Length: 460
Ligand SMILES: *Cc1c(COP(=O)(O)O)cnc(C)c1O
Image (cartoon, rainbow, N blue to C red):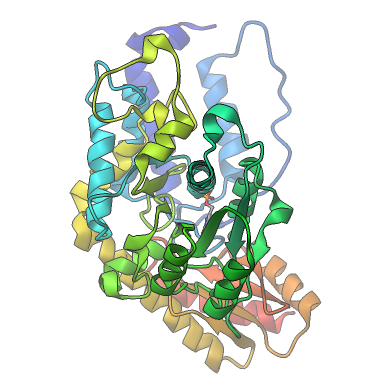
């Protein structure tokens, strides 16, 4: 071990290296290949005495950095990937500097900053003040909390405190049409059984819940507890469920309504609370992601509910040294972890720095850009526009070609390195899926994408 490893006198040197690496990465984010190489790690061994800082930086910058993806860049259109804005990135650096444990709130303002960020998010999305919640690692963890809280609620309906006494004898039916894969995982983790989910039909031609089918599935169920999982929006078609009608059905059947709104909630910034997320405010619990369209660094999701007490019952930590008398429950009694990083800070700083309108601007820009691409695919002799759900995702395939050609083209696009896209499936056929959620995507990026796409389709 060398001096620098255990002396803060080395701070200037650490900051210098940090600046160099950071500047090099960010300034090359337009010129680097969008996707890195999925290669084996450097051929290094773990040593007894450690290596010099200079060697560490050398091996990291030469052997690791060139093979990282540029998912922060303007042409990474895979999955639903946000970039990270300058302010959010800056805030995230500081999270490590301050290294707060945001769980109990003693001795630090950080806990109250997280509470303030949650409150501002409900304001940003025009949700009632009755929603409360916490930051999670992502939408998967938030969906897991959604499954857990729904289970606790269903238990209460039949005289069982699941958190205290277990799920023995619990009757629960879960209904959903097009759940995100992470929701299915979450239901499995919560002991509700991936194979026990009742899959409700979708509307013809898109992924939204068929309301009549949901009504009849709910009516057929004899379970004492019922849970409906709705989407705003689905991850492939960006289809929005009719949350008003679903809420009415849930009321009729005393069912819990969890809405996975991971990225679809951002539609509220452009369309308001009367747009396609109308009724979201009536959900019992909501999942959203900040590392997608809010453009903060990984990992950052949010779980919101109007019934916090069920969450606290589920997540309560019964340790005497943790007992508090505060009115607000502690974060370790609301989520999975006892120890939690200052994940709220990048969101808190972003909301302050960009304001509602700053965020709205990149959301509406991305929607317009995706529409432009959809129109381009529709007109292109090389491509078929398969589906555009009027948000930030477009589905396309090489014109008149089969699934194998679509897969081959997807591979060619991602290897080329000018843009990065994901595979998808739409109404039984393979498609290529571009999702635009990055604050810094501009017209020039669309132009680069169009030339790459034309070239690669013709070379197929
Ligand atoms: C991305 C996504 C998830 C999973 O989110 P992670 O943040 O990756 O855990 C869940 N639901 C929807 C609708 C999503 O788009």
